Amino acid sequence: MTTFDTFDTVIRLVYLAVACCFVLGLHLMNSPVTARRGNLLSAGAMTVAIAATAVVLAGAETVRPGAWAALATGSLLGAAAGLLLARRVRMTAMPQLVSLFNAVGGGAAALIGVHDFAGRGASLPVVLDVLIGAVTFSGSLVAAGKLQGLLPGRPIIFPGSRLIATVLALAVAASSAALLAGRGGAPALAVLGVAALISGVTLVAPIGGADMPVVISLLNAFTGTAVAMAGFALGNGVLITAGALVGASGTILTKLMADAMNRPLRSILAGGFGTGDEAKPAG
Amino acid sequence: MSVQLLADLSVFVLSLLLGFEVIGRVPTTLHTPLMSAANAVHGIVLAGALAIALTAEGVLGYALVFVTAAFAAMNVVGGYVVTDRMLEMFRPRKGER
View (cartoon, rainbow over the protein chains, first blue to last red):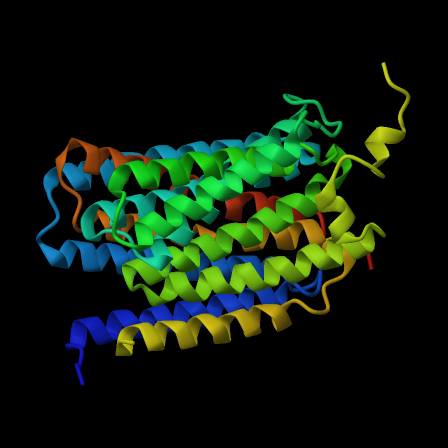
């Protein structure tokens, strides 16, 4: 039985406390009175988790200067962009912004999978991480584009969409199988990534703009699951807990939102009919 | 199955069950803020971006760390700030009640 030294023990206990705060924070969102407190608790816990991880990084002494520079500039740029967008956006434009943040979250999870693949080769968590992360990245961008009016809000139906879906599913299955069998290498990962990115587009494009909030919630749950898979790949417990928490609560929330709109989730995802968008006269 | 994988799997499954239960009573008005709050929570992927910097080397590795960190930081900072802005609307104003 391996035991951790004091430093590792403290870090892992901090991660446990952080995970508890995420659960409590989400639970406090059940009531308008406590919701803001819940979000602040969650944000505080997030700050602690990032700080603790930074301490681990600083203590490791193996991190190359180039990696530090890339990490620092990337984080600062991303944080500044996120802060600016979140502050400036109009209240009515918030759902598409959430979708954009969800897209980059999924993208980050997929890239962690790519990094892990480059270092240690393929594993089931890596394959799932790249697959789900890439689907949610492109899917959330399409959802945000529809709400922002950059893409038409009406359902976009491709000719031969069934055939495209079949080809994509085959490409995903074949590349995943090759990766898990230890063959294929980088080209197989590229096929998986590209097929997943296209799947994200073909999944969301046929769904009408009025159903987008429900779809964004579903993609949010996807990202949570991708982050949990990244946690498996990295052996990081707090990523697994937080990711699974969002994956499950996001799924329930998706169901609640669909119920509140009186729209069965299945017909939303089938897309292309029965939406408010379609009822409008053409032209 | 390694001890680590079994422990990770247990945490994963129990966290899923917890996630299914934790928001059961949320009123309709809080659906969008809750979606945004959950979106911010998976910004924990930033800790993963930090973790991959541990072993990153070469220009490609650094580029990967840069993009991952930028994406994740945008998710986490923007997510919490925009959720807070949504929830500000629920704050009772002075004089009311």
